[in-house]
Amino acid sequence: MDLRQAITERHSVRKYTDKPIAEKDIMILQEAVQKHNAENGLHIQLVLDEPKAFSKGILNYGIFTGVRNYFVMAGPKDKTSQERIGYCGEKLVLLAQTLGLNTCWVGLTFKKIKEAFILSDGEKIHSVIALGYGENQGVQHPIKPVEKFCENLTSATLPEWFKEGVKAAILAPTAVNQQKFKFILHPDNKVEAKSLFSLIGYTHIDLGIAKCHFEIAAGQENFTWR
Image (cartoon, rainbow, N blue to C red; front, side):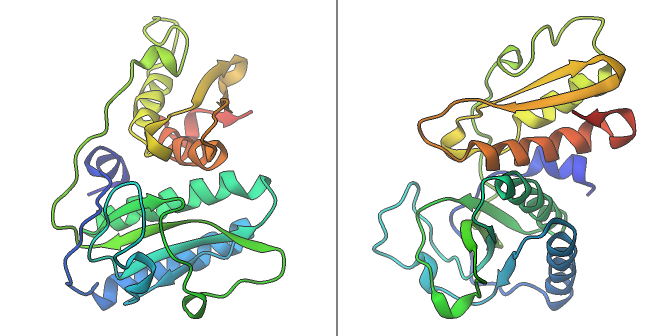
């Protein structure tokens, strides 16, 4: 499975089995975490066999069961790191999907188990990502009309790579499926990705996730970000 296939097959999963993650896959994920941290100034951490963060009794959006592994998406407190958190986190999500693992982005509904991770001065946890072998493969979230994310997407003047990128971005997970983003094609194949207003928040993280999907489907060789 490549990353483009992973985009279409990935769905949020909230119920997991107790099957441990294979050591070879842990090594692949850890290497990816180290790479993203080094290149993006983040402090993402993979927590393994830790059941307390998603223990019963938490009031949450969606009931989580069996979660013992998760990514702690930590980085600088400033807002500029949120988009990088979303982009790198979704790269990890899609990598996990290619390894036969399931995931779910989680914003608020988890306990911070202090002994499970390390934060440096000026850092915070922006979100976590549940990880493991799901009891099922999840279901596709409702798809909104493509016109909400780009003007004139059906126009013959728009290149196919751009259309494919937007279609892939629509499949990206966002906070409560709010999908508050938009893509605009400018001259010289420059693409602008904008986050829109939301009372819920998380729009900068969501934008990073959507840009990750767009980039994979559109092909980095076809455009540059504006």
